[in-house]
Length: 559
Image (tube, rainbow, N blue to C red; front, top):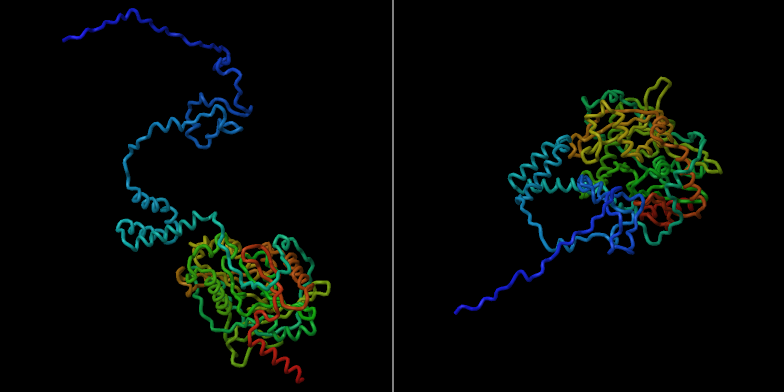
């Protein structure tokens, strides 16, 4: 059955009319010239006259391509105003589909490590060999190559990614006990402004010892004809102040402040030091005695103490040859052997008035070449300083003998220490090598210079000693020598002796105000400050020392 179909008359439906929008004509500019009806009486977005207008019509693309122009049209009042546009609602309705080809990112990352650093690694010694090992590990996927790659990546991260990281905290040179009290804090900025000018040259009050003559053939040593550093089996006496029989004798007649040249140089150059050190101060009957502790590492020479990247952050294990303490032992070993190797052994010596007071009967012929000069300085206000100074050798000069101090600069690994390869630069750019040493070892070189000035040495001679192989700290070679007059070298290195004397005088005056007893001067391991502690009288003393003191008291009572 066919249903009825209702026909609709389309002519009876009204048609919609098109309403043309109102067009505003602005013959004098761009944009509307009247306010639309719906926007009347609405507050305007705050703006500044310095804001740039034109973001809507900027079709150049530079604003969005260059990150530096990202805030070109941003108002100085900041975003988030009434008319800011939020696109979160629009983006929530759709998703982008990534149609790019999938690439093995792990493989690309491994290759990029070698490619990114290939240029810099090939320029350094051993760079090509290390790159070969790295690429072999990637291709073969062997465990050895993976271990080498992991170690190399770790070193690169430490070198490039952690430059801005805080420096590792150092340990103090001595364990501070809870019963020690801080009496005084002397900060380096205040000490660096002190000055004690016009200090008169010291006078000799006692001289002793014998010196060997310097072998001038070592002045002709270069990197092309280097000489191996030899082991010299000689005894070096490092006697502290209160154990010195000559100082004990002089303390009854001359001076009221006593110390060795190493201790005085450390105090004078305190503002240049970075690592921690300590000095014991004993005040007895208005007299000061500056001592070092028996178990301290005070006599070890530091390595790259003032460098921008000291060895503290370059190695992870204390067993490494480049660990700070191992480097200090190596530097001390080099200095002892170099200072004796460059002398003429077996020939006639230059002898002073008195014999070396530290030589025992079984040590004849085995003691290192050294001469001691006990000198006295008048610092004013009834402060008389007596210092035991040292010479290492003697030269035949035009006007008689010239006394010299001999020190050794050591190269350990320029690839890690960011230094200069001596074998490539020493003969042609010796000034650059020395300048790099002055930057990395400012405190050590300053102390050596002060010791030479206190002793009245005519010359200070430096030897450039390097490892034969950078991974072996037991074999070394002498690559060259260089000598300076101590006063001229101090001027070249900006060593202000007036300030050095001022720092020493400040420390002496501070200690002179204290009561009789024992004190400790400690360089804070992580701050530029000197701490003065009041410590018990029996601190740092052993049973042997106590027994010897008791024996001395018994002898005095019997006499």
